[in-house]
Amino acid sequence: MNENTIQFATLVRREILRFVRRPYNTFLPPIITNTLYFSVFGVILGSRIGEIAGVSYLQFVLPGLVVLGAISDSFENASFTIFHGRWNDYIQAVLTSPMSNRSMVTAYVSASALRGIVTSLLIVGVGLVFTPVPLANPLYLVAFLLVITTLFGGLGVIGGLWASDFDYLTVMNQFILRPLVFFGAVFYSLDVLPPLWRNVSLLNPMVYMVNGVRYGMIGVTEIDPNTSLAVLTGVTVVVLAIDFVLFRRGYGLAE
Amino acid sequence: MTAPAIETRELHKSYGDVQALDGLDLTVDRGEFFGLLGPNGAGKTTFINTLVGLVKKDSGTAEVFGFDVEDDYREARDRIGLAPQEFNVDRFFPIIEVLEHKAGYHGIGSDEARRRAEDALKTVGIWEKRDTRFDWLSGGMKRRFVLARALVSDPDLLILDEPTAGVDVQLRHDLWDIINRMNDEGTTILLTTHYIEEAERLCDRVAIMDSGRKVEVAAPDELMARGTDTIDIGLADPPRSAPGLDVEGVTEVAVTDDGLSVTAAGGSQTAPALMRALERQGHTVTSLDIRRASLEEVFVNLTRDDREFAEVSA
Image (cartoon, rainbow over all chains, first blue to last red; front, side, top):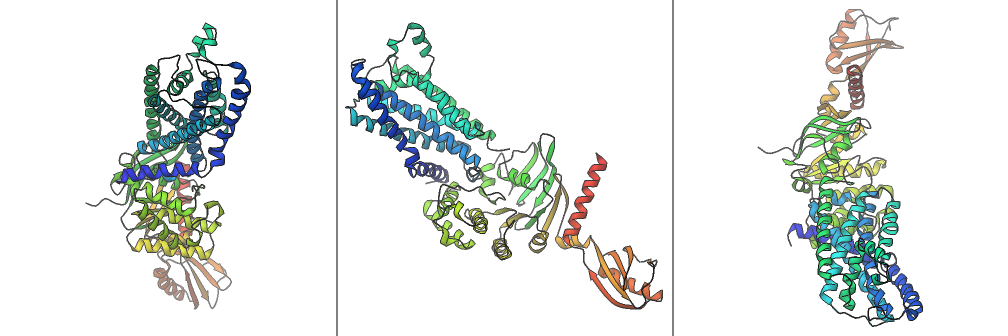
């Protein structure tokens, strides 16, 4: 391995070990939360709702819950590790090293995306306990998961650089991301909304992510998956570019 | 021509109205043990953080071994090992892993990183604590660890920001031994300290900084030679008032219980002429004691003079 690869691999490894060694903080919460979701929304309420788009309600909400877990954890991972490193100054060990700014950003985002994907798999695993999980378009599923976890890893970097207190992380995750996902057609089909609210919902980027993953899993979508994937990929590239610029300028990192 | 270890020209950095670095020009030669002295707020840490990229300069140039700290930041940082004043250590991992990570960030492969981490912990004497997290180390061990982390990348320039602040005498001597050994092996050392004795004992040259500027740079002995020594002279017949002494270098004469206390630049050179002058006036010298100016006195005088100058200029 050359020096650049070693530097990148070291930071990725450090980031992965950080979340792997703390499963009670990282992996257990989504398992518990989603078990509750499936129990309440799927089994108790779902049996009364019946089928949506030709699948059981449990199968219909599963892709949305996967997206919710994936973006929450990839965002939380990047924002927390950067903010906590700034808060306790230990990110300086990375910043004062010869790693390139681009390598640092790529490492933080990659590890965060990986955590989001692991969370997705755990949620699918929980779903399997309750219902068969279809896999209609696996390539789309993989592509959407890669793009949205990378996108939210990238957004988490911005959040981690911007935050000046722990409250900021809570605000971003609980008050911005979570409402957007809940109104992103996770628990309902856009078809049940009045036309006005349906159009308003289309302004919510989460709708495209949820529909994309839903297309990958159950083969049903209300929005063209190729368009969604192209737009999300474009947004991800822009967000990563912003990350690189912020690191180069030392935003939140250097005085 | 070989570039110096550190070279800055007209380095400026301000925080609002506060001028942390005010046109700092400084050169540290390769292999040198260089001390940076100055009161709190003099700009020492800002200067160090500019070299490692934690502070963005407003203007001027700063180079490490000929590499610009911003344009060639990767080459510059690869040559620096930093032991900062404040503890900035990853609390998630046992300390040996923290060192392995630091080595990895410098492009050192995992086997070699492990070996270096072990060597660094042994060098600073906390090998038995290798599986402990930083928070569980004692204060002295934390200081040792921060030094180990600076050593793990085998730097050409070791920057130590107050490395012995708050440590006991034994540890201070241990750390001095380690640093001296590094310097003997060719590593350039930049040391900031509040302990004047430390600079006097260790450094080839010291720079005295105040208000973001360099006030003076010289070897500790040279600086001390610029200070005024005190010559205590015992006389068989102490006078009631200070006699007039027309001797070059003498700046002040005071009467004591058993003779005179004379303040003079270069006490050793002045003493013979002083004794002759007293004997010419009919005094009998019974004892002579020369107390050299300390680096601390010179430091206080220089920084006081600089502040008075700044106040007058303002």
